[in-house]
Amino acid sequence: AAALARLVRAKAGVRTRVGARASIPRSMFNRGRKQYVAEKLITLLSRPVGDRSVVIGLTLEDMYMKSLPYRFTFSIRGPAGWAVVSRARMDPVALGLDADPALRMRRLQKMVLKNVGALSLGLPLSGNPRSAMSKTILSVDDLDYMTDDFRPAKPSGARRTWLARSDRVCKQA
Image (cartoon, rainbow, N blue to C red; front, side, top):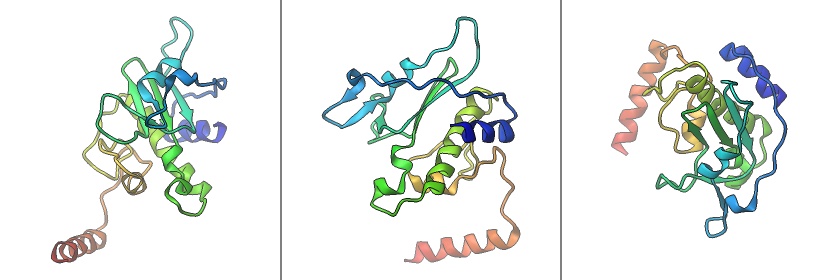
C-alpha cells in the first residue's frame, strides 16, 4: 500500500497516506455468488467529520455490484469521495496462469489512478481505452491495454499504420 501511495503522489500530485486495515463483516458476502457486494463494501470506508479527503479502500476479495449485470467489478466509486478497488481478478493466478506480482501491481495501480483521477482531480471518464480514465474496463485485457497516463500520447504514425493493418486482418478472419 505504501508503494501505491507513492505512485499516486508522483503521477497525480496528490497527498496520500495509508490508513488502518479493516476486517470485512461476513454479512457483506453473498454466499450464492461467493463474492462480496461492492455497494456494501464501500460503506466500510470512513474519514473524520469535515475531512474532504478521498478514501480508497483496497481489498483482496472478489466483488460485484448488485446494480450492474456483470459477474464482477474491479472497483466501485461513490460520489462523496469513496472508492473500493479489488485486486482479486487482477491476479493472473485467478485466471489459471503463473503468478506475476508485477503485472498484478500494474493493474492495481491503473485502477487506483482512475479512481484518484475521478475523485481527487475531477477528471471526466474518457472514451480513449489507453487513458487511465478509460470509461469501460470489463476485463483484464482492457486493464492491460490501458496506461497509467491520464492523457496518453497518440500512437506514432508507424504504430497507427500497424494497428490499421492488424484491424483489417482481424476483420478478414
